[in-house]
Image 1 (tube, rainbow, N blue to C red):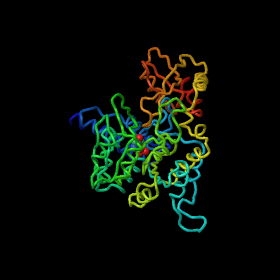
Image 2: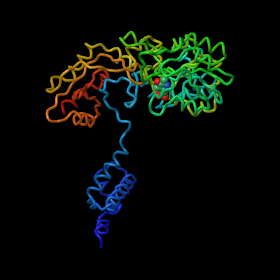
Image 3: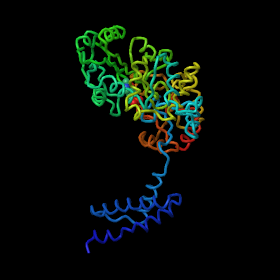
Image 4: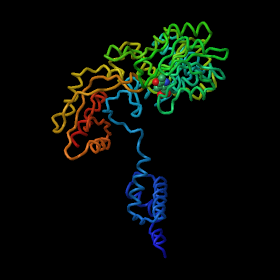
Length: 451
Ligand SMILES: *Cc1c(COP(=O)(O)O)cnc(C)c1O
C-alpha cells in the first residue's frame, strides 16, 4: 500500500469528527458540526493528496470547532476605532447617536405605521416618514431617500438621462472607491457620458460647446477623496446653472458627503453645503446618509418636486428603497439638525468638534498611569470622502515597545475583545483619541493594560 493510501486511511470519518466537535464546542448545533467536519475532512484529504501527512483526528476536530464557532459569531463585530479617521468606510462609517439608535430599535423590534395611515386606517406611504424632515433640514421642495448614494446617483440618471447624454467635467469623472466609478454608473443607468474640459481645467464654455440635441443633463461630482492643486479651474456654479437653464438641461450635483453644517467653523476647509448647492441652482442634489450627515447608510435626492417625483416613480425605486430601520435612524439623526443640537449629539460632529484639552484628558484617563504609554500630538482626518488632505489636530496614545515590533503590537490590539484598530506612525503604534467613543474608554484602558 502506498504512503498516500495509508495516510488517507488515517483521516477519521465525518461522524467521528462531528462528535469530537460537539464535545469540544457544546454550543455548536449538530448540523453545523457535521458541515464543519465535512469541510475540515475535505481539507485534510486535499493535503494528503498533495503528499502531506494526514493531520490527527484531534487537530481536524479542533479546526472544525473553530470553523463552526466562527459561523455562529455575530458580525460585523464592534471594534474600537483608534485610527483617527472619523468617517472610516472600512469600519462602518458614521456611528449613530443614542436617539437614532433608540429609533432604529423601536422601528425594528415591533410593528410600526411604516406604510399605514393611522388617520384613515388605510395604506400609507413609507417615504412620507422621511421626506418632510429632509425638506425641512435642506430647504428643498422635494426629497427621496434610497438605500445609498450610489443608488441615488444611479436612479437620478436612469430617470432623467436614459438613452441621452450627460456632460461631466473630465476632472470630475472619478472613482469614489468600492467600485463606484462615475463613467460606470452612468453607463449602467443607460445614460451616455460626454467628457468636457480637461483634467485640471473646465470652464462654462466647455459645457456650452458640448451641448447638443441629445444632451439631458450636466452632472457635477464633488471630488470627495482627492484634491487638485496648482493650475486648476472649475466653472462658477451660478454661471453653469444659467447655462443649464438657458439650454433646458437638468443640473445634477452629486455632493457625496453632503454637509449640513459649516466645516470651516472647526478649522477645516469648506465642504460644500447641501443648501448652498440648491441655492446655486442645482436641480437635483444627491448625498450619503452616513458620511458628514452622521446617520445610517442611505442616499438622499433633493430638488424640485417636478424632477424628484419622476425618480420616485421609476420601477427600480422599489428595488433601491430604504428599510424601516434606515428611515427611523435617518429621521432621528435629522431631528438633531432641526433642533440645532447636531454638534453636541451627532457622534461624527462631536468628534470633529472635540477640543484638544478634552482629548488630552481622555488620553490621560485611558492611560491611567500604565507604563509604556505616552500622549503625543497627532493628526486626525474627517475621511469618508470628505475634505481630503485636511487634518484635525488631535491627541494619540503612543505605545512604547521593546523587542515586540509595532506590527506585532497592532496585531495584538486587533486581537483584543473588542478589537482595537490603531495606526502605525514612524514605527510606533498610535491610538488616536478623537475617534474613540467615550463609551469605549474603559475597554481601551483594559486592552492597553493587558498588553
Ligand atoms: C461617497 C460618495 C458616493 C457613494 O455614496 P454611497 O453612500 O457610499 O453609496 C457617490 N458620490 C460621491 C461624490 C461620494 O462622495
